[in-house]
Length: 203
Image 1: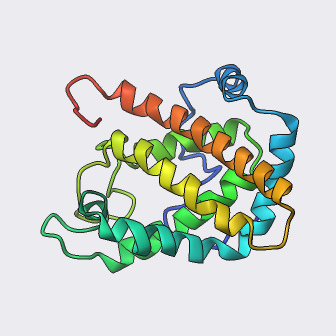
Image 2 (image 1 turned 180 degrees about the horizontal axis):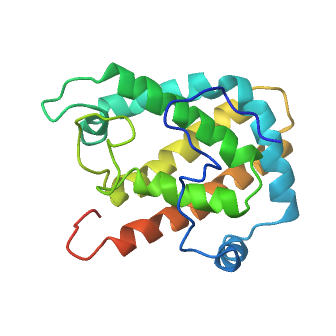
């Protein structure tokens, strides 16, 4: 059972309002084979969730305030077009970011999870960005920035995975499972961008 952070504005996992994925469970299974997913990965990803559960706020703070805020082409996606901060937007999306960590580690990768992957991607494209929170910011987050930042997320998460005294071998296994999951999710998100690619220029 997944542990949800609480009542998170805009978080709609499992809601009937979430459209079904255009990617089938069969295609998801094929992607899992492609990334080399194993039963051990499922076990150690769940362990990673238990390790990270009480660290999500610190982790997201590190990613957003410690890294993204210092990179203008990334920071602008949480600001107004004039470059002003939007505190409520940052707070709400930050909580959703924290819950994404838990969903990555503790949710079963079933139809609901697959549907919500597509929702996550849509909310970064011009189809839905800003609409959930009713804010005025950049019209979309380019796919290239998402793909590139995965490297930073994977690199920095290791310190948090190693923070609870697990053996180096178990930390390696947790980190490997986490990295495979993010590679898998990125592949899924790219489907939404590809579907919108004709004339959108959102790469």
